[in-house]
Amino acid sequence: MPKLKTVLVTGGAGYIGSHCVVDLLQAGHEVVAIDNFANAVGDEEGSPALRRAETITGKNITFYKADVLDKAQIMKIFDRHSIDCVIHFAALKAVGESMQQPLLYYQNNLLGMLNLLEVMRSHNCYQMVFSSSCTVYGEPEYLPITETHPTGKITNVYGRTKYFIEEMLKDLSAADEKWNIISLRYFNPVGAHPSGMIGEDPTKEFTNLMPFMAQVALGKKPVLTVFGSDYNTPDGTGVRDYIHVMDLASGHVAALNLLSNNHIRLKVYNLGTGKGVSVKELVNVFEKVTNTKIPLKYVERRLGDITAMWADATLAKEELGWTTRYSVEEMCTDFWRWQTMNPDGYPKKSKTSVIVNGKS
Ligand SMILES: NC(=O)c1ccc[n+]([C@@H]2O[C@H](COP(=O)([O-])OP(=O)(O)OC[C@H]3O[C@@H](n4cnc5c(N)ncnc54)[C@H](O)[C@@H]3O)[C@@H](O)[C@H]2O)c1
Image 1 (cartoon, rainbow, N blue to C red):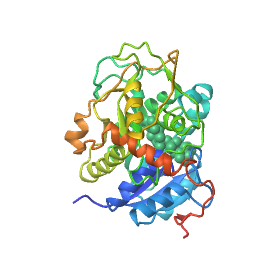
Image 2: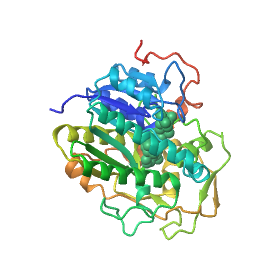
Image 3: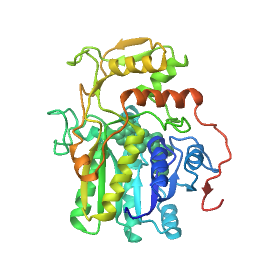
Image 4: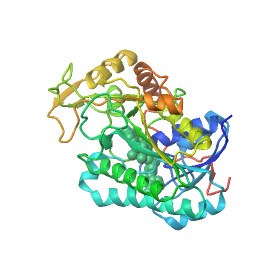
């Protein structure tokens, strides 16, 4: 039986965080979530995504509007709750923005992590699951990518923040054996909870393929811009390993179980399906399952974009006992359900039932 835990979820109101909270609650864990709403809908009164996560699961979430850069605030949360493990999603993630505002990204992502680790250590909490990314691999030297593939040759600031944090975690776990950390390198998360109640609704400008495609299908944007049609791939468009966000969520519960039962100090796992899908293929599936037509506009490749990348997810299967369950069709169907049930995303002003700042 997995041991049940009180888990602090940073960035819990965000896309992946809110889906992961559903799985954590369903697995029986207690969730304390924080977010500063840098890229999620919500306010002092709480997060509509987390309110809906409560409705889906019939369980309560304790929520704090808090910033991981505010160490004193994080300290107070640890004083108040006996946190067993942290799942650290909170980060800024827009590649383009990271190139224009590198200091913002280094401050938010690196300093946020440093604060968190220091507060954790001061409260004898040494278990963490960290949201890393396949961007740490840079241009692949071979495919599918295993966890032993070299890292560090990264072409953007956002990716470098993930790489630097992984290096920091290596130093930390080497210096102090109490730490027990898993870094999960996500491939390309898409889709939404099958209920259609929660999904992706960023407040910053976004360029992610699926939300953009859905906006085109809804008629909110005229055309889907495809960057590069002359890549060395079967149809000329870039190839990625798209993974359903609920598969990603279950990967975190599996990671938590491993940390509960083993002292591994620091391990890294890829979370992907192991299959590459081109932009064109994804658009075709999306059009088919949603019965829509997506007009495409092909433009030049973006600087730093990678031709093809997909995961070897064998290690996660063998050591976490985790595999993906959702097909590309389900990724598209579930995202479309979320998008059509919530064409404008979450209600921008809503009273939530989550426990906010420790009070109902
Ligand atoms: N979505 C992807 O394609 C992808 C791929 C690989 C890795 N990741 C990583 O996974 C994590 C979650 O990504 P996501 O797609 O859910 O993004 P997201 O932007 O939806 O979620 C991140 C959340 O963190 C919050 N946040 C940011 N800075 C904060 C701070 N200083 N204090 C408190 N909260 C803060 C944001 O408001 C947001 O709600 C991130 O670390 C991201 O880098 C995402």
